[in-house]
Length: 226
Image (cartoon, rainbow, N blue to C red; front, side, top):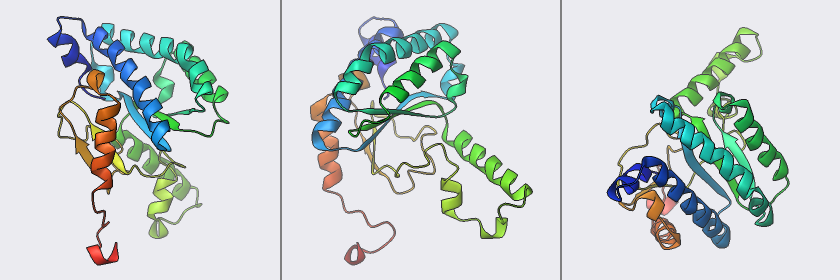
């Protein structure tokens, strides 16, 4: 969800105004995803690298996350959205982590869109944590390194239980993955738009899906096998 800062700067506003405008886009896209039958929607909400930002901006983002979680919980329940979080969420303050955990608990039985917030998330950190967990199992004699499979590693990723994403939408024209779901996006289709996240609306979302639907996915095979 890139472009909040640039959106604000172009309007002579503080960066926090861009983040607040970005929340409105989140609401639009979660609703749109439910309308067209998207089952899993992962939003790169706050990366491991984002902790390096100015403390004032981090505090504003965390406050906005807390306020939005508390305010939108009733609507998430009403729209049958199941909220989960991926990443090192223990880095959040106890108060904000509690609000997130309460929302996750409150929506755990919902059967609509699974809204996955990637929070304090980094793809390299995720893979490293998985390797550490596997190494401990090997050290305990519970796993033979010579018989390690992709499934074994996948089972220790933060996203265990979630399917790999079909489509990755990158707003604001950025042409990189930015440490996002590095393992999971091996065969994900990429869609890049110059639209800044606060301006990203239903039409932009549907355009990305339409583009995806018209692609041929071969997963290493030839077209006749797909």
